[in-house]
Amino acid sequence: MTALRVRWPKSLSFAVALFCLASLCAHAQGAGQGASRDAAGLGRGINILGYDGIWEGGQNAPFRLDNLTAIKKAGFSHVRINFFGFKFMGAGNVLDEIVLRRLDTVIEEVIARRLIPVVDEHDTHVCQSDVSGCAEKLRAFWRQIAERYAGKYPTLHFEVLNEPGGQMKSAEWNSLLNECLEIIRRTNPKRPVIAAVLNTDDIPVDELALPADDRNLVVTFHYYAPIRFTHQGAPWSRTFSRIGPLDWGSSDDEAKVAADFRKMSLWAEKERRPVYLGEFGVYERAPSESRQRYLAFMARSADRLGWSWAYWQFDHDFAAFDSARQAWKPDILRALIPAR
Image 1 (cartoon, rainbow, N blue to C red):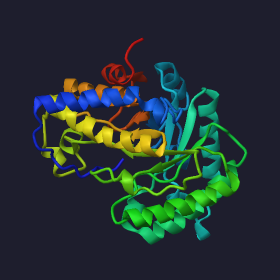
Image 2: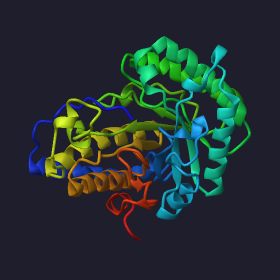
Image 3: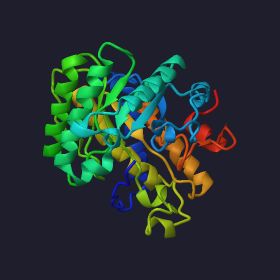
């Protein structure tokens, strides 16, 4: 997860808000003409293991592999495994075999719970600041991962890179993305692969260049707008740590989301590509009721549009699960997955 730079929208009238929301729902009902309902096939998911000690050999630090059972029982159908592969590369950008065996174990445990695993290369900060260094490592990463899992774990999804952006512009990202796709397809011709829209506040999906004949691709984007609301009180930011409490849930707030989602939905219908909302969340310092409204609106909007989605994140900050108590935070879980 990397913070988006969000431009504050001009005030929208109540009538415009209703129009945008109505258009969003109407488009979802007609989506069968383009991307089908949940065309990505991932369903509802949650991000895991991004900042956990498991990769260094730790156990229950804080994620426990048996937490996957709780994730399945709660109603989720996939997990997005946030894997920082670059730091486990040695000479020649060769991945540490011991760490790869740990990744094997995680994937197998996920599949054993009848969940779908997504392996997401998550080295955002390297790739946003050092484009050439990132490119070399990313190509090496996918060469090794693709060869390792060729012919194995048919439900496993690859996500090429988390949140490309920063110093990496659309032309550079399209070039690198297509190089990585070519590497993956040599050994995994039918593997579902997730490709990200450049991570900027205007969601430039029209700039994304994908091979037209590859129909096993899912397009992903992340949504944290408005950033002042979703990151209010975040202690790692000198700006956000001083912000709050801020509310969310007005008709203007909802209309802004509806307009942004409609942009993605129209593109997906035109290009016949499934969409994956790979991250959204609200930091825990936000007012509880506003946080619940925001999360419920995001999840239900994605559901109506037929998009798969994954909440950020299971534990650590933005957490949906209390690791100390080994229990879900009920308000967050209810917002994401309403009681049947």
